Amino acid sequence: MDQLAQQLINAGTTNISNVVLQNFRQLGMTTDELVLYLLIKQNDSTKVLMPNAKQVANQMGLTEKQIFSLFHQLIEKKLMMIISETVDGKQVDGYDFAPLYVKLNALITTQETKSEPATTVKSSSNSSAVKLNRQMLFGSLEKEFGRTLSPIEMETVSQWLDLDHYSPEIINLALKEAVLNQVYNLKYMDRILMNWEKKNLKTAAQVENAKNQNSHSSKENDLNNYNGPDIPLINLTDQ
Image 1 (tube, rainbow, N blue to C red):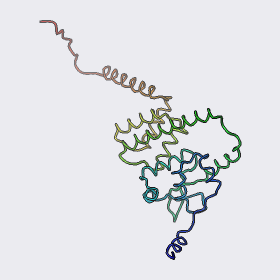
Image 2: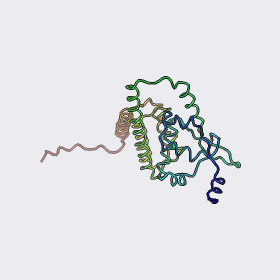
Image 3: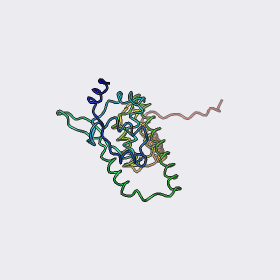
């Protein structure tokens, strides 16, 4: 018992508001996301330096990939954001849970206002479809890159979807272009997406049509620029 008491003293405590516990479902948090939040939030600060994903994965009985997916889900739900802090003169990435409390404040303020059941079901269905497309996109990127995406890379892809409003089909085409050129990073893909946006190519079909037109024009230019000898026409039916 003395060993347990000493361990309890040495380990300290994690403080969490009961308001968060009572409303985590309404905030859109899953049980796994709540447990992850509790494990990495070891003090009263809303800011937490990047935790050891392997250690957290072992504590939760999940894989590192699943942990990164949970981190991304919290970012996607606007409950957390990635920050960069200076520690001992070095830039260190971390997480800031300030958005969670902003959303909690809005929830408490409007808690008496409830959506109609039909609207709730429709919203939930749309949310599930968006989440599925997002996870499939992450899977495609990780498969082609041959590695797990970092939280910052996940945030970049989320910004493409949520802020830039690029469709998953467009992002997949940019991924295809990057793979064809053997450039496996998001910065290269971002330049491709920005180039298409400047040309007002907003759908996969528009991108494909533009590529086909460029290919056709290139072939015509090759024929027009041909400076070799005349190619004789032979009638194969003549004997």
